[in-house]
Length: 413
Image (cartoon, rainbow, N blue to C red; front, side):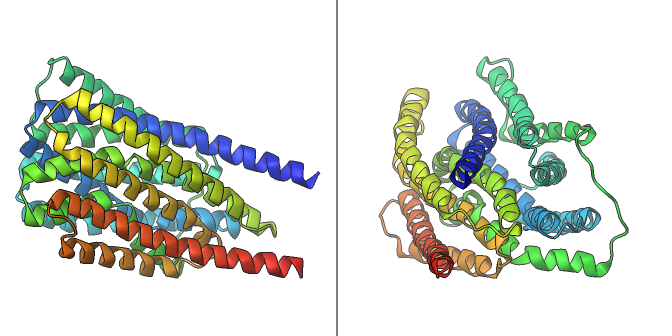
């Protein structure tokens, strides 16, 4: 009887992961279609500017989350303490912090035109709404709506991509970035979804501070772990040109689909394992090992598929990105494994190690970049990303495996 219940729980997890993954991958497919459309009409240099802008916007938007989504979900489910109002206050405060950071980044990279600044701010607002809706639906374990809030913007991106491919619209890199930002606003229609049930209470400074304190370690880690596009693009731009950034970014964006798979797994396993441990159950280690194996197999298939996409879709224009693409697919695979394993630390209320692991990952990456492991700068940056992510994944896996072994021994005794 017990084994049947466990089997049903695992089947449900895989089903839910599949729903969220389909949504994220479908959205990624729409995004890749828009990417292909812009890459075809823009010069490689302008595409480099567009890619840098989008990666900076996404990285900047993650600061508005800064681990508060996961802290809110675990706090609400594990302790039955709904701190939604404090969660919203934190989101607004983090949004305000993002504005001067955005201005500094755009000015530093010489991209601070009026249209770009407007698009950037609109994009930040759109992501703030999207992340908030995501947290609400994740807490409710309403995975159909987490599917839709990212798919709807994706459909709009794909529509614009089709219009561009059919030559009905010609865009500059600034206009392409504006489309990227504005389409994210479409997820705001879910603010009127009837399934949203939240309670607004008068927040206290202590409540806001406690939620932020819980979020900080994971938030610091998240800023690094989910922003490798922005980090690697920026590092490459410091030593090369926008043209080389364009070649590298093309590979980076296609390979980045694995971060979306990790997000799908994290979305489902976080509330599931939180409720499991709350009911005196244990973290499901076997499920984690199984999913890691599946991701590695997907990486092999993705390498073959991505090669065909680049060769037949672009000919020689981005042929030089293939080497980096193969390396980055596996770099993001290990980062994906690392990311979804990290939900263990949230469940155990021990997120402090995450920020140190993320800083170590960044330090290793920068050290390997400085070593210039390969003569080709683009390949060297990609390889540095792969090695650093692999090392951190081994460390994280070792920590969780050690905890799991101790738990197994104590249970048998």
